Amino acid sequence: MFTLKEENLRTKKILYALMAIVLAVSAFTALYYGDAFLLGTYEKMDNDDVKYMYAAKVLLEEGTLVYKSYPNPTLFIMPGFPVMLAFFMWIFGDYENTAIAVRLFQCVLQAASVYLLFVIARHMFNSRVALIACIIAALYPPNYYTSGVILSEGIFQIIFLLLVCMTLYALQKPSVGKYIAIGALLALCAYFKPQFILFPLVIGVTWLIRRVPFKKMVLYTATIVLTACLLLSPWWVRNYAQFGKFIPFTDSSGNPMLMGVLPGEPSPGFFKEYPQYSPDVYDDSTEKVGHIILYSLKTKPFETIKWYLFDKTILAFEQTFYWLDFWGMSYHFVLALHIILCVLGVAGFIAALINRRGDILVAALTVAYVIAVHIPFVQFSRYMYPIIFIFTIFAAYLIAVPFGSLSFRRSSSVTRHFP
Image (cartoon, rainbow, N blue to C red):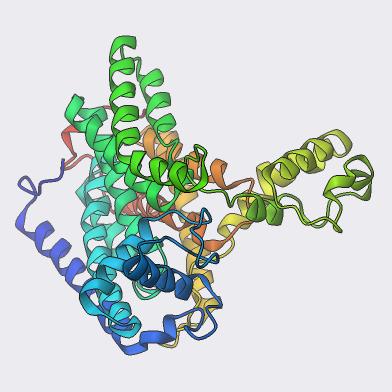
């Protein structure tokens, strides 16, 4: 699935040229703008990126993972990104040199992601669609922003692309080894973004639709779970040793959930029924979120359901992960490009579904999963960035249709139609 051996020389040259362009533009942008990509300042520690860098410094010097808790250990963040930053800091020393090295590393990852995008799009449709998808990705400004900002999106994107690639490969040619790899990638995802830990639900639904034998489903599920648990166990041991209880991921979901639970403040009637959650009492627990949702469903069922199923989905995509204007491209210009891409992606999915073209089931379920797990939270543009590549692929399919038949050079895994 990952090889280009069957591709013609022209396709290979275009793909490698696109990867080189993405690498060069990403690196030049990251080096030219440098610390203009910073959201906060090291002196004030007033945003996520500089807090991550500080966490890496403390982790390297004192062996303690902190965030806003120094000198006490934290449960606010997962360790993946601080550990990565600490590795670079161990090699390059101070904040400035570490930031440069991390940005350049993320530029390499961005170029590599073009290759994985090609592999996934080719599997779903064909090489023509895959190349168009790579061209769109090379023209999508937030990809270059991701290379420069010191946040986890750059490294998480390629881990997630690998997870999707391996999922498609395992569904095509199942083996225990491939599902071990899925379990390992799943654990790695969780070390950066734990909300992706239930991604195997996508695989499970695909198994059910494709009527995979029950014994194989049990075997492969156990393989994924055991592998992921083994690799996550160091984090669980650390949490138990330092906090005296089993904590699988973090203890920080209450605040972002409260920020995104309703459009505006909860009904005054809620605080009469639950005075312990009044604004006078600080509480950002997930229990409070649950009570607010249940109360809203009871008192305003239609508005609450509409808010969660429709309004919040629209909110998730009406922003773009582009927080620094560079090369003369304003946020509003890039937002327009982003919205066009999303609209084309949805239209492309509908066209593929109607025409019963391509192996689109995993992609569709992945989008549904990512939207669903973020529905309870406040909608940030960062949250949907990991699945923009899927919209890119469907947009490429829509663009490719008028330019000829889609029957040439298909991956052997998709000689069947949807699903």
